[in-house]
Amino acid sequence: MNFTERVQNLSAEGAYHMLARAQAFEAAGRPIIHLEIGQPDFPTFTNIARAGVAAIENGMTRYTPSAGIMGLREAIACDAGQRRGMEIRPEQVVVAPGAKPALFFPILALVQPGDEVIYPDPGFPTYVASIQVAGGTPVPVPLCEDDDFSFDLSAFDAALSQRTRLIILNSPGNPTGGVMPLHALDHIAEMARQHNIWVLSDEIYSRLVFDGLTVQSIASLPGMAERTIICDGFSKTYAMTGWRLGYGIMPEALAERMELLLTHSVGCTASFTQVAGISALTGPQDAVEAAVAEYQRRRDVLIAGLNAIPGFRCRTPQGAFYAFPNITDLGKTSAWWADYLLETAGVAVLPGTAFGPRGEGYLRLCFANSVSNIHLALKNMAEAVVHSAAEFQ
Ligand code: PLP
Image 1 (cartoon, rainbow, N blue to C red):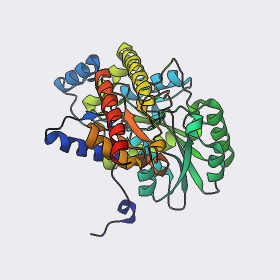
Image 2: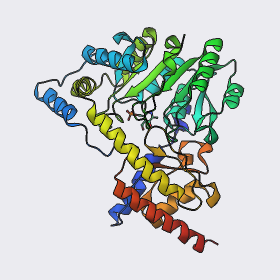
Image 3: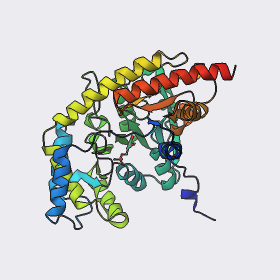
Image 4: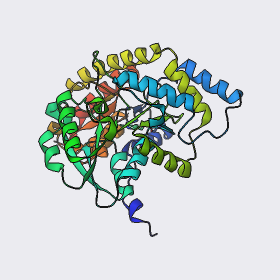
């Protein structure tokens, strides 16, 4: 069949592919520990779920404005502004069904054929897919393990060109859990200002940071609000992946374009989901804090356990809920190891290459899973590694 160039090269997200494989094993009666898919294992916090149910019962079941109901846009402007130490107007906020549209639509609105877009490798696969659909040229910049998976700044400088239209950042990052240090953000902001480049800052994990760390948004640096799109949402922070609720924060003229794209694609975000979102932001935040403390506890168990397996070397992620161990000492490819661990250890993980060529030599493990499952996964993986050494000597 003939397809347009813009969809011809699209590929699936590795996480969904591995989930399907793991589920096939389960259907055949094999128990699998799921460390592949990146979502909280907690149910949506009770006050939020109740607000959603009440909204349906109260008839909040109709279309809303494409950019979202004003009460939610106001709540987001207030919350996001306070957290980032900047003033945000509700008109700058566009609500969407998930954070993904807040990546995809701004890229569609800003990038056209001939434009180059810098993005992190390894990075969230939607970046490359969106750049491709927009007809732009993806320009990967490697993340440096030695620098806690921040941008390699000399590679970043070399990647800049007259045609650079947009820089995509993701901190804390998927798949590495790395947080970009302020000096890197300062440098990128300086280049963006000098060369008049837009920045798309994916901050979906900004509430999931550990050891008391605070993260800074590049949008809050001088002269950056007018050239930055913040992408954020409710999926990870409030355990709401299936509700589909996210948002973008951007200059008003761009927000109007994004609103039009929403009008003509999805129409609007589900109305009761938006009402639940207001409760999430304005209600108590102790469930979020408890979840972060629990993720940190699980992180510590997983990282210590991974580093005890011969051939695994894993830095301690500062944010998100992913470990990204280096397995180059084990030989063989990441994809081989992901398959082997699924088949031999019954543990589903993702190969680093699901996030770009620079992910070779790494695996991604999501620690949004119980401590007992993490212990069992570690034990099974350690045995599989010993087994592979005997089998493939
Ligand atoms: N950005 C990153 C870095 C992610 O990891 C994800 C989800 O995994 C998203 C955006 C999309 O979030 P949502 O499910 O709200 O669309």
